[in-house]
Image 1 (tube, rainbow, N blue to C red):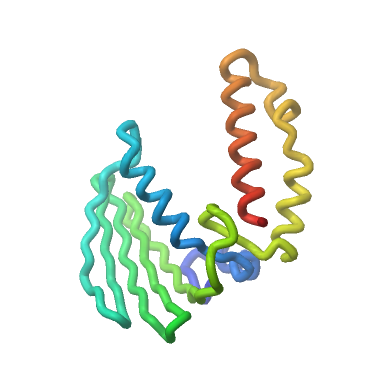
Image 2 (cartoon, one colour):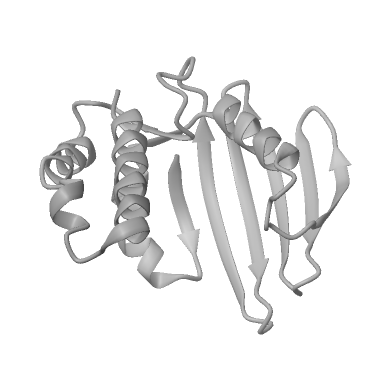
Length: 166
């Protein structure tokens, strides 16, 4: 993924980090299916409207009961390259625009939605962080059921980070 532009200046500062990331669409689709099937899913049910869907262009609009909206335009630049322009409007009416390029880089390396080259500087940072993520230390402040939940969250977070850098 290559972040080209954004109205969020903080996001632009971190654009270099995003350039080393891959998005596994198979994993994203699987995650979406799991959310749909989860009857206790607290996520609100948003309306999705496909405005255009051709071989070279797709346009989708999502409106949620909370008032948030998003609009995405995806254009095929070539067989393996897609340009996306997305606008997200919050409940407060503030808009955030993101423009990015996605390139097909082969099959997914793991079942994580976000993936990185295991030799990248980003993965080096993640691996360094993982070495410091000890559930016993991070959850020492908690007690009883809260401690058990904290340890579970730490284990889940650690597993997810490991999948990002296979």
